[in-house]
Length: 106
Image 1 (tube, rainbow, N blue to C red):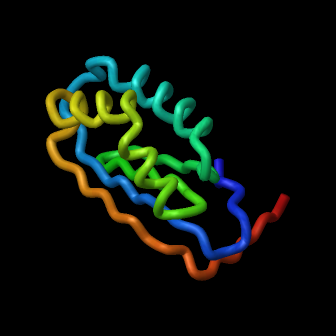
Image 2 (cartoon, rainbow, N blue to C red; image 1 turned 180 degrees about the horizontal axis):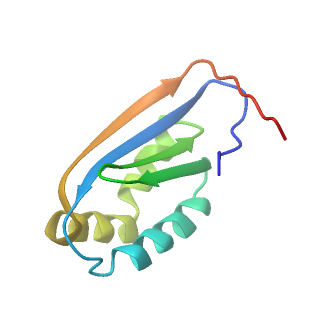
C-alpha cells in the first residue's frame, strides 16, 4: 500500500536492510513497531518491501518527530534485537521530501 502523505515538505526515513536467516521473532516485532509508530506524534505513514534487500520508508512531519521515535523505549529494544539477531547489515537515511506527485489508475 502506498502511504497517503500530506503536501510537501515532510521527512522520510529510509531503512534498508539485509536480514539474517530465519524469523527469530522479527515478524511479530516488525508488526508491533509499525503499530507503535502509528501512535507517535508526527507520524505520517509507512511503506515496506522485502526481497533480497528490505526497504522500509516511514514518513514524518519533522526532524523532531523522527528523533522522538528513535528515542522511544520499545523502538530502542527493537533496534538492539535487530543488531543482535535480525540484520547482517542496515543503513538508515533521513531525507527532506521537497516535492512529490502521484498517479492512480483506480
